[in-house]
Amino acid sequence: MKNTEELKFSEGPWIVSDGLRVSQQGAGLMVVAEAHCGAKGPLRVAEMRANAALIAAAPDMYEVLRQIAHECNGDGHFPLMGYVLDAMAKARGEIEENPESLS
Image (cartoon, rainbow, N blue to C red; front, side, top):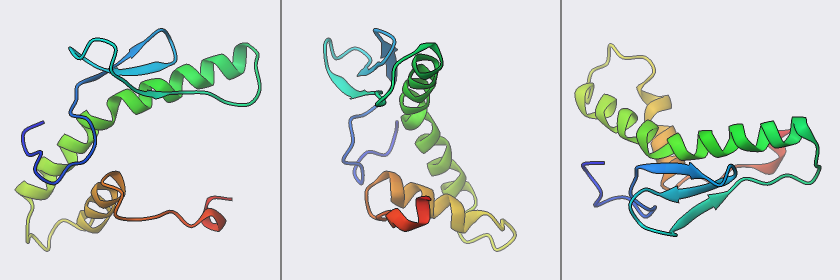
């Protein structure tokens, strides 16, 4: 990740280790997150592994969004810019989710 002055989360890349743990690559045992759910079983384990993979991809996805925002800054022809900026703000913890909107 190139531009880290605004970021509060651990710099990537992140990798999935031990199936459900997401760790910062090159940081030894620096665990960033663990993917869990209440139920067990093969389908739930597959879901937890998929969640871990999604979490591990977060720094890469943030960097892509940052590059899009930089390249399209002020360009009124990019109709998705509001979504890009909102997703970046959410990743930085600047937007809180409304629990009622998640159901």
